[in-house]
Image (cartoon, rainbow, N blue to C red; front, side):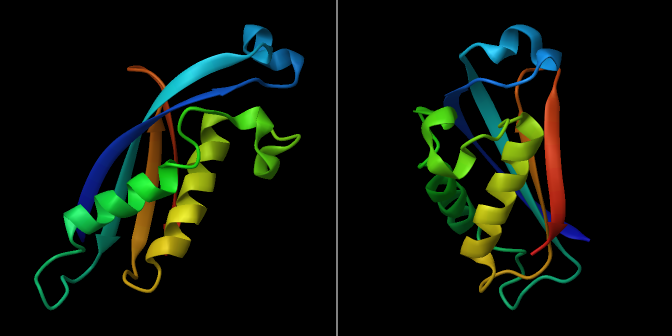
Length: 125
């Protein structure tokens, strides 16, 4: 299996509902390092999984509407706990829509919320 990975980051603010979140129920910020890995069994006619520069551009455009935003104020997240797991799936779904015509294979989106914690979502594109 071949793979290509790119990395970017976003800074967001949000809060959580529910006592299990303790102090994170208050507004707080997060800087996510976002890794996207694409996998496919065979290389394309150019001997690549995808063009790395193109993938990085697609990721940057996917992240731009979230960057420097309070996720609690965005309509697509109304009433939702925007956990790291949830946001990894949201980025996966949004990016998959952007790249589906140009890439068929598997994708993993990993959000690193610190040097010791991360969450991922992966599936077929």
